[in-house]
Structure formats: C-alpha cells, structure tokens
Image 1: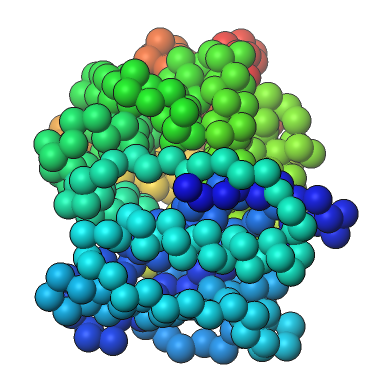
Image 2: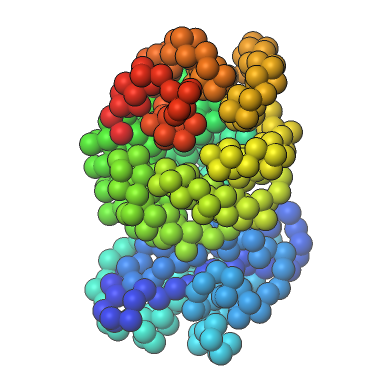
Length: 471
C-alpha cells in the first residue's frame, strides 16, 4: 500500500520534480521502460496532498542531459529533485534513486532496488513510498494512510499505454494521435478493463475534432463512446471526467454539467496541469477571468514547458482583453518550440487586435507554413480583411474552399474571413451553420466581435450569435 500524505505545515505545498531516469545501456526498448517508470512515479506522487509535482512534459525537457539539481530546480520552480538510474539485464532490474534539496544540493534520501522485472509495479510503489516517507519525515509531519490506484496489473498493457501517452502528449497532429490510439487499443486488447486507456482514446478523438483533423460526425461518437466506457469501468479516474468536461464544454455547450465534471476531476487529482489549464479556459468562457488566470498560472507552475498549457494560457489572456500578455505568451511558445504553429498564430492574432499588421503577417505566415489548415488560413484571411487587403483575403477564401475538399474547414473559419471583408450576409450564413453544428470556435465569438468586427464591420446579427453558446 502507498501512504497518501496530507499537508499539515502552514508553509505551503512542497514542490518536487522527478527527472527522467537515466538508462545507462542506451537501449531504445529499455529507454521506453525507464521513461515509463519515471512517468508512473510522477503520477503516483501527484496524488499526494501536500506535494506539488512538476509535470511530465516539463520534467522530460531535461531528458538526455545531466543538469545540476540547482539548475533543474530553478527552471522547474521546485525545492526538491528526484533523480536516478534504471537498468535491466535479462529479467532483472536495478533502480537507484536520490532525493536532493535544491537550495544546497544536499542529498536527503537515497534508495537502490534490485528486483525481478515482473515486480515493476511493486518497485514503483516502493520507491514512491520511500520518497513520500522521506519528505514527510522532513517537512510534512505524520499523515493518515490510504492507497494508490493501479490502473492495470498487466505489465505489457501498461507499457503499451505509456507509448500511447507519449504520442498523445506530443500535440503534433493527426499522425501522432492515430499512433497513440493504436497503442491504447493494443493495451485494451490485453486488458479490456483498462479504463484510463479508453479515456486516452477519447482525448485523442476530441483533439482531432477540435483542431480540424476529423469532422465532428467521425470524431465525436468515438469521444462519447470511449468516455462512457472509461467511466463505466472506473468512475474514479480524473482523466475520464476531464474528457467528459471538455466534450460538455466544447461541443454540448452545457456549462453546468461541465462545471460538475471539472469539479469531480479536480477532487480526484488536483495536481494535473492539463486539468487546471482546461478548467481555466472554462472559467474564461464563463466570465471569471480572474479565477481563469489563477488556474492557468497553476497549470504553468506544474508544467512550465508544456506547449498546450502555454497555448491555452495565451487564450485566457486574449479573452480577458490582455493582448500584450497574450503576445508575450505567444513569444514564450515560439521560444519553447519554434516549429509549433500555435505560438506564431497566438502572436499574430493578438497583433491584429493591436493593429500591428506587418508583424502579424510575418507570424501568421510562419504558422501557415508549419500547419496549413483551416485554422491558420482563416487567421491569415482575417488579417488581410482587416488590414484592407481585400483581394488577398478573397484568395484565402479560395484556398479554404479548395482545402475543404480534402480536409476539415469549419464554417466559423469561412465565416470570419467573409465578415472581415464586410460580406455580412455570407458570414451570417456560415455562423448559423457553425452554431447549428456546435463548432467550438463559436465559444470565442463574442471576443471576435469585440476585437475584430466592431465599427464598420459590425452587423447587428453578430450580437445574437455571440450569446447562443451559453458561455
């Protein structure tokens, strides 16, 4: 059993990061395994009340490097670093770890485990327990005991799930999501009751719909099917409620139900960056931008190097009308990953509002070159329309019509470009279709009207569409 701790100190949460365990053999198969153990220990520690654990994405930015605990701790904003090595030979495993205090580099706990490979779950629990006890003895005081959840007892299924999670978290596009789904499905074949793998599939399909990789009629039935299956199998998994909350928010526009699902997810695992990030977006939609900023700040404290969390943080700034900070957040994204289209687009969208059209064009064209789809084409079209380059905007409309023959281009994508060049009647037709189909960009429509479609481009009909989502 793993003891869960409750913070008794008034000093605040104890912050810790788990760096990727080093694989001395440099064996690719073994590397997946060592990464998986790191990931699982992060997940276990994240369920401990009183600890704030740096997320996997940010911790894994140090993979393949050998940072000092002080350097890693400063970058991850934590007080303690857990690091170690994991090596296998035959059916044997050796795992060596140490817990280091960032402030002075002092090693406050070490552990070494030589075990049979079949006992990997027990090893992970034993390591997590030792870490918890070490931290508790130093800082947290005596705490009541409880247990940690095992999602599967099938080691091969667990390894397949971790591979799926790797591709899911890349936030790279349809190919990566399909790879993730294939691994999750393989895990389920070995363990049909593996609830969190079903939740992973639901998340993949939801993201492919949201980012125009799949049409709603293809993706959303799978989101519903796999979310419901995950909840039927195990109603105590935060990831399942997060998938449910996102569907209720983004497609069903049922904000009361989404609020309940977010609250349930947070009660099950409050230490998940993606959860706080999505909850922040929910709060922004419902008008509580102050609380939304708090949630996104918490998400970024847990995952400072996460592309998706930084991306949504910028949207929260935009909704709040804080365009300068939205641009700064976009620049941070570009610095983190220049090849990610989202950072360039966030900068460009907010520079349009600030009427810095030349730089907006540079950044949006960079986004379009990286990710040629309806989202980036639409942004470029709006730029041209609002800056008076009407023929260039019409050329973007032509490109979107051509692209729509082979890829998803939303009605919103089309409508907002027509609106930007003053073609309100055509735009309204598209916006009505977008409302009918519950396209998620319409959740942002009131801010689009506020920032881009005011003045000479405003049409009284836009006001009605801005209030139809329930946000």
